[in-house]
Structures are given as C-alpha cells and as structure tokens.
Image (cartoon, rainbow, N blue to C red; front, side, top):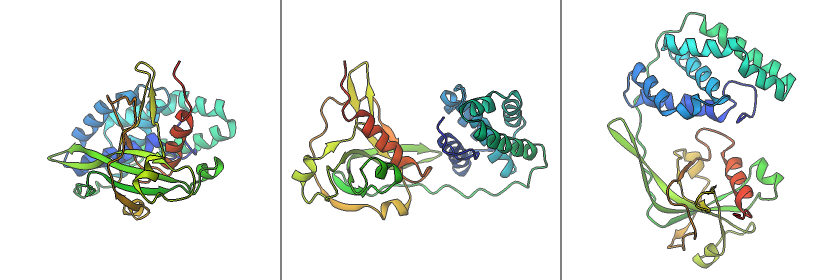
Length: 278
C-alpha cells in the first residue's frame, strides 16, 4: 500500500487523483470531459487491486465536494465500499487500522448518499514555465525524518538542469526542467564543478532488460516554498552518467502533492546505489 495513514487522502494516489482531476477542470475541460480523460489516462491505476478503489473513492469525494458528482463515478465508489475487498486488505495488514479505515469509508458512503453542495467555481489554470537556464545547478539539503533515520540528513541533493520538459495542458503548456541529480558524500556544500563531479549520481530506477539505470527526471514542482530552499551553486557542464537507460524519465516532486517525496527519492537512492545486474 502506498499510504501513510487511514485518511482518504493519506495516500500518494489519492493526492494525485484529486490534483489531476481539478487541474483538468482548471484548463477548461467540462466535468464529463475531465472525468473521461482522467479515467482514460489512469487505467494502470484503476486496474490495480489496491489503487483502483482509491481512485474511485477520491474521484467521487472530490466531485461531490465540488458539486459535480457523476452517477457512474458514485456507482463505482459505492461498489468498492460495499464489496469489502479494499477494507479486507487493510484489516489483514493491521486490524486496528482496518477499523479506522472502515470509519473513513462509512463517512464517505454517507456523504455520497447525501445532497451535494452547489457547484463550486473553478479558477482558471495558471501555466508554469521554469526559468532555469541549461546547466543551472542547485543544491537541496536533506532534512526529513527518513533522511535522519538513514544517516543522510544534512547532505545535499545536487540538481542539474539538462533540458526542458513540455507538459501540454488545454491550449498551452507547462515547462519543467529535465534534470540529473547527485548526492554529496557529506554535509559540505560543493564549491566548484570538480567537487560536483566527485558526487555520486542518484539512480532512480533500474531496467533489467537493458541492464541499465534511469537517472533522468523532470522537476515537477511549482511551489515557491520548495524553490526558496534551494541554493544556487552555479552554471556548469557536468559529465553525464554512463550506462543510462534513455527511453524514459520520471517526474520528481518534493512538495506539491505529497510530504513524502523526499523519502521516496531517498528510497530510490538506497535501493539502487549498490545494485549489480546479474
């Protein structure tokens, strides 16, 4: 389970579904269009035995609160509440948490069967364009609980822009920086390109078929709170990682959708840093 609590939104998938649905409304799609597109783009979630029910619970809850609950969305959410399989997984994992999750789902069921509030106004989407230049390099200091538990707190993630990722939405697009990331060996901030070169690249994933690692991601982040934490190191040309799988890259965000993203990044690092393909 990708959850950190029993609450409806204490889950990465739940946070994402709510954010993406509202964003589709903000770029000008009708409720029906936004719902249809979100369902089409989320089949990999919907077909998952755990994430599928979460998708429908959150979509139904979000639509109800916005005065836009569609009958077919309510029907799916109610079905997954009533069949009990989702709750069974929680109870098997931890009976006490299963009881708390049941309270959450009972509350959702009561809400979905009550009169909806009036349709709420949706503010237009504000498109985002990151202003970093190619080669710009920033440092982010680790300070989360997971970093502390694993002896990584105080070290720096070095973020190096290598390109732009266009994210088409509605009639326009967001632009996010495509990045490589390194991690410092200690709590000292690198002072020059040579010290950055000596830092270890963060492997985000591994491709067993090609026996290569994924290093490239895009910084899917718009929060000024996050960018205010960054330290500008300089504009550099840095030697790229070797043996990289270049067929895909991942969106990395530190704060926008979840408080747990720093932890997730470090889990990638710990899991892959010493991995050897057989």
